[in-house]
Length: 175
Image (cartoon, rainbow, N blue to C red; front, side, top):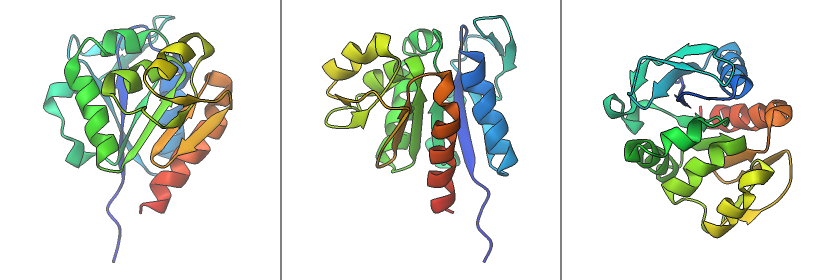
């Protein structure tokens, strides 16, 4: 019996960190994992901090968690815009509660705070938001990648290799 193809959502909004969107996208595609960029719905194309565009495949209010095997939340300043849309946080919480992978890097941790999934969980993030993570109940550690069940977190672009190794390992284990 052949397994169904896996599909991961990468959340996007303006001011995203370019490597934290495109490196996961390319690595997942190399592993034959389908990727969809999911935006807040404010527009069709979002610009990185440097202006590099990403076209969303769909808006958050048009997608369902049943159609995805996980979500990746990139950093930059995009999470500050994402968290203004409650459906983004609800999507992350539901993916999490379904036992699917939730990956967050850098300032993506802000979305974990908004989703309310950090209490008692071991996690990392960009150092500037560690107080927010701790206040939300996370057991913060300063490591390149932290795996706590289905929650996988990293600190910064330099950690992307370790981050994606763990994301791919989790997704493939669930094949």
